[in-house]
Image 1 (tube, rainbow, N blue to C red):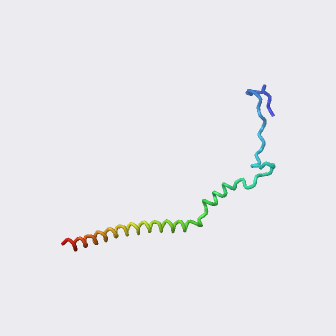
Image 2: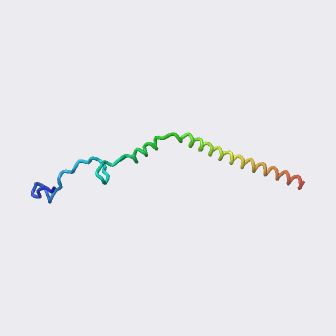
Image 3: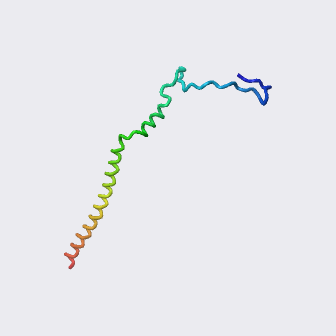
Length: 93
């Protein structure tokens, strides 16, 4: 395992060549199944466009509802002011 310490430029025992990496292995020494499962799951999720239409419709519905609520609030305030001004003019001539 160790090399000759008397070699040129050597400062102590050296390790031998590294073993070839064959991939991840489980406790039994067999190749681990699905070593790239997380990466492929993320890639699949990123490329999936099946729910995109539903999300777009939800965003459009949300924006429309915000505009409708804002418009109704403004119209309601104008109607309330007109109604109260009419009542005030009727009872306080």
